[in-house]
View 1: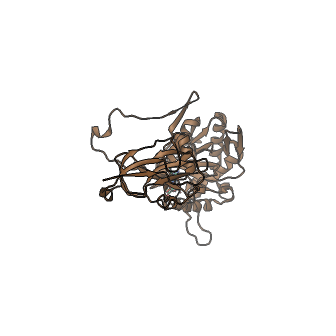
View 2: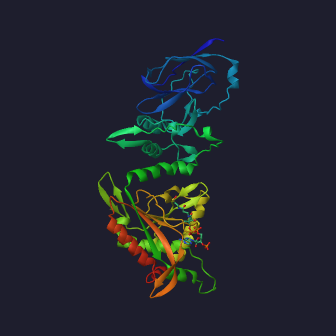
Length: 418
Ligand code: CAO
């Protein structure tokens, strides 16, 4: 075995370029073209691949060093062993620098690079990686929302938000340590957190920790609405029309949003302003095998009850088949989270920012009540309204619930259907 020297290749005009990552360890077996170090200038970053196969003998550089053409990166022990390297190697042909041919090559902004380390691979552009580094985040730990799991700048921000708590102006990284591991108590199974849950998790944490939630529970008598709903039929064919109560609730919600514009708003913390929305795009929490999704149905104010029901079916199907456009998760007025098809009464829905309120819907149940001296059975719909107390006061929250109740009650339900 003889020592091979791997040096920094010709990089055109670039001088004193900083090493931002050392991607191999001493003693590691590597193949030709495996990335060794990442260099970063003001304009771009690039990975320097190995020109030889072998086992890393001595690494001559460290993160932070500034290097030029010809500087020694590391020495390799040439070996046949390298053919047995088990770890698959991510090829990055666009970024190859051929130091054997010694042809001057400028560092150009490469296409989104494969960030490769001894512990894994992750797609991210140099700009995003730099951004992550500046925030002290390891790009390998960040769930990527883009195609093939590529990490975007927004993913980095979301990840950092989820990892830190602001405490008296100082930012602390959270670390969790269990005193005893789960397997000490019996058999366990470990699975990956599904992608949708990985993405929604930080969003939920942010909402729960940053928004002062108030949840108001209310019961609405929907007996007449239910009678009306179950009596719907097609005028021409005579066929029964099945419409979910959710369509009526969405329509009633739009009426309430018109009456209480603070609920159809967002807080702009940067400008210290309230943004009032003049549209009525209602979000619906959809339970899918991949996790919870909240698509919007646009312009619900311009739709009939039947159309809302159909839109709900269509949109939830698109979500369950992962065919929904990402943009449909944004730009909402307020969200409805309905567990009415499953069961249960009251719960604490978490606001979906930048919205400021969410309506939780439970399952309608029968209740015996005394009305005008008689015991009668009525249909009761449980509602749980969570709102952002920074913008909405308790009194306004209560008024909103009362108004919503009227919209679903005997005097108004029929009007909604028109
Ligand atoms: N009370 C009584 N019955 C109700 C009801 C209510 N509040 N809401 C719906 N139902 C009935 C429907 O009429 C339907 O009855 P039929 O089968 O007789 O027609 C049945 O329950 C099934 O409804 P559904 O829930 O499948 O359909 P939907 O249109 O009402 O709701 C959707 C659509 C997408 C909201 C729903 O499928 C879903 O995913 N719900 C879960 C939402 C969720 O997970 N929220 C929690 C978020 S926080 O983690």
